[in-house]
Length: 175
Image (cartoon, rainbow, N blue to C red):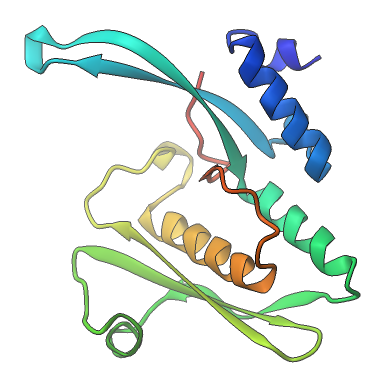
């Protein structure tokens, strides 16, 4: 079945993604995990040409949430959003980052577990950097929000999230 989802991906990459799905209970049909091809080029301008391609396993935000929830459930802990995701104020940026970075949109997400512990997450998106999915409503704020949520989830369930590429599953462009 996975070969119908990732028909162009190399066999070894499909197997690695399948193992990840099995290990964490993920479902690629639910847009939780992706195999994305990135072309590698050399040269510049007219002299630029493709030299190879890399396939990367990418984890969507839905998968990140599910993995964190599963890890916490095994410890009888649940969580909720106590603040955000939202844009960080200038005052918060100075307190947390030491300065206001006008070239970045900074976001904060605060999670709280059922024991009352707080887990802040911070994320940014560069101002002026093109965001995929603009035609579908995506924007720099959304990307900063997702990054801040991932950061908070990683603190809430440390060591539980796999160390692989991540992406917003609603606005991922790939093969």
